[in-house]
Image 1 (cartoon, rainbow, N blue to C red):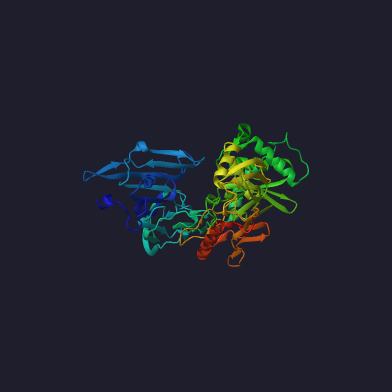
Image 2 (tube, one colour):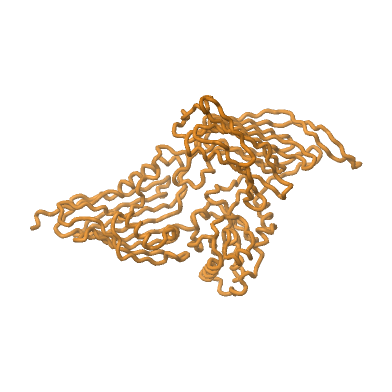
Length: 634
């Protein structure tokens, strides 16, 4: 009754919901059919406080099935929604008609369900057990979510036969207690004469209990690649199996083991060996980057991306025939085409920024979710994502610009940092004058690298050029004439746009106020919170410049001019450089503005200084030049 009567969570009055209970347990059991397996049970109870909290009533459970009869299974799924009506508690049970399964790929499935009769004020509760023979891949237990958690606990009992590394992650306090207990399993086996024997085997075990209370909601923040990298959770890595009737079996997977598994698989390694899909269109020629670009353009002209990301391709012939494929289809087709042309091309595997960083301490094939194309010409390396419409060699979409990717070249497997392989550059040049039509600005906007890529993606989201011009005029608070653009629809390459921007201003007024910055790089400070727990991850290395030349109208003098300023930020004083240099030369004013980033990762210990820097930049962007009519001139 107290839970149903709750209208706000005292520890977080803004919360859309609160997880009242998040309790998990993992125990090992023995089955004659499959041997040892684990049973993971989860019980969750949630109070819905606002409409946004109803999201938590739609759940999905991921599980693995090798065939229709083997693999993981989910049992005991039950749930209840509690509502308070006329002072009485009304219960609505979770029924089978709102539970269904969905395939996510060939072997992974989702069991989905929606809590019935849920509304603001409801308390919902559900429970299920997942049984799995894949004890080398125990489920992580996540203590934290996007709403606050009042109480959470997780208990796992590990028999002495299985030795795991226990890995904690996150910033919130979780208390852990360990104690020794005994476990008994009924084991069946055949003796030396082949007769079936059944024994009750008693062994020691370690019981670990994790408890957390009043955990705050974890929420995304500006310039954070993957929130999942910082969420509070515990994971387990199987190191070895030590059955008393056999020798110790070391299980720890290395990246070399994963390499071998990938190269030997038909879905991944098999598709790197396929050739001939482009034999009628590509012949071996000069092994130059320009030729590789021509081949990439050919692949993109034949197959379009279906907006689905994948690690391994489905069927390359089907993708080529249908003209549509996922990200892996696109990249493996490009590798095939490049090899036909005689190039040394190979897959590069990674975990996208959104998916989170790779767990290098305990290598995992499941952590990889994306494949791009690598190319070696002489001693130089190049990388591209064939599914990125406007991408090119060493011009990658941000999802692929990660610190650790693995080059899967059978001649040499190696790690590569893709986070800084491509960078962006922008140069906006402005000639500004005041006449009878208003404040007239002749603008030239040049973009290169990732800045050009982002511009093209943004431009392609408009239905046509006219709509883009309309939105740009609204953003710049003026009227745009004589708009011209080149390179906006081409994969790779620079983008240049030119236009005249006219803003309202009256020549003849005693005072004229001019904001010299045409394009405000930052409209407001992205770092509004006073404190931040997580590091700052900038999008990519960028060098942004704006050069403005202002002609002072005849009969006016400068009454007020912004001051020049330079800020240098970072532990080594070179992570971010900001320069605002303004100079008056008789009848003209020249502004040189630069924002230059040389480092992507900025620790949370530097956050207060970073927040202060951006506050100064935003303030500087809005400063005005004041011109005054010169009354001495008649």
